[in-house]
Length: 341
Image (cartoon, rainbow, N blue to C red; front, side):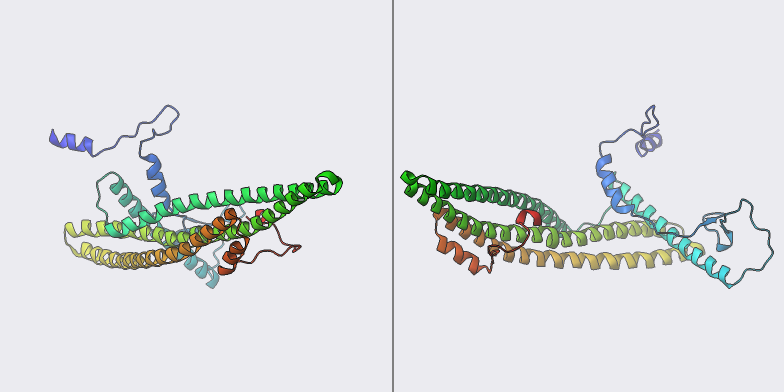
């Protein structure tokens, strides 16, 4: 009776609805995302051949497909071209076979981990650093979005101030009794426009640097992290396979399979350890680069905004010179910053 209970506990039933679709489990969404990392596209085969026989059939079972309905009954012996074609087809079949076996083992390992039946290799320190990087990237993306919104508002403000200054200047010429009042308001708006263009240049430089840090530097490190996670899954899959073979009976056939599994496991172990080292190095360099870049950009942003709202035009211009920011000269034909986004 105990065996029956254990047998039922080890079996998962997936309900099927009336429309023929399987019922959704709560963890299906997360599982589907993990499977997408394993089920990569298979090799691209351009051969129009059909394989007859079993899964492990030889190249003699390849039947070329032609335009006619009936196979040719010619007894002409195969030439060198046919042998080359068969060799290429056999190589591609081996590639598909290896890819299928690897995908099967990785999928089996992934499902075992998801349902708590398998073990996985964990580097706690590295895992914490990776999770911290992903969280930092999300926060920087939020800052980047807010920075772009600020540049859009500043640009609209500059357009309004420029139009208002022109209107004041026009009215000062047509209203002699208010010429002085309209005149100094026009000058004020022109000064604000000039300072605003300087501030906009500083903010654009700030946004551009954050964008490079997020979409290039951090993304490059995360691509290496994805490769590392895929290598970890393969390593655990072949480790589990080797452990199962080691616990089995030892005979002549098993000994050969065990040696082959040991060699394959060692190759995946070397790949896993290499990528783990690459991730650790990239995370270290990324942190150093992030601190250096953000120290400069935050200082620029603070000085520019403070000088603008204090009305200190000289300090605002000095801030741009300090960070080697060059504004677009008046009349230069260049797309606006909105067109460049």
